[in-house]
Amino acid sequence: MRLKSVVKYYLSDIKTSVMIFYIIMAVGVSMIGIIVNVSAGEGESYSGGGEMAAMIFLFIAGLNSFKQNFLFLSINSIPRKLQFKGFLLAALTVCGAMAAIDTAYSNIFSMFFDYRSTFLQIYGSWAAVTSGAVVILVTFLWDITIYLSAYIGGYLITSLYYRMSKLTKIAVSIGVPVWFTIVLPIIDATVTEGRIFKYIGNVFLIFGGLKYGVNPYIPVLSLTVEAAVVAVLCFMLVKTATVKE
Image (cartoon, rainbow, N blue to C red; front, side, top):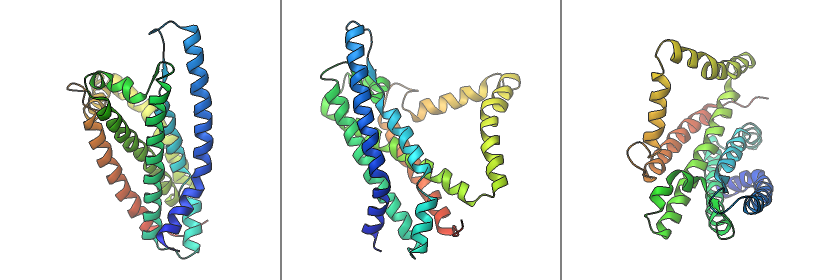
């Protein structure tokens, strides 16, 4: 099985889900747009944020992209390196296609009702003083990098879970949410007086290009680096993974 066949295999695993997702999104956004136009005056309300739904969809897709595919390809004697190359190319294809679709439909929907993409909701002040062509290009780049980060992030998590014992999976599944939702907030409130979450917030603002003015090029770069680092970690996990049920 060549690289092209591996890529096709990965794409066949997700293409139906992507089609269903966009049918639901098109219907949902259209209905919300009609409701907003009918019930609210001009400038009072708007719809948008479809990119966040796409990001969540891709994260979940990433969570379901490792075990069965890895076992099937390994049983068919596909080398680990070829498996990961195929996944990565498929991920780039899917994320690129979804970024192009989302960039296009956000511009099309905005012609008929007040639709604002997640990108414009965050970086609207930058877009207001930038040419339309540049805004479209940067929107696409922002979409594809955040989608790729979500997709590969989900793949990394499921790759880690694959290597864990049942007891470790239970401990991690319970311990991590408890730590971030209960333990860390208590420590931050009682010991550090809010400095931990303030620091985390500042980190997000810096890498999101919102700390010192509004600059969407920063998150595009930071998300690209993040995706590359996560991809390397994923490859290391895939390379040493063993076939097991």
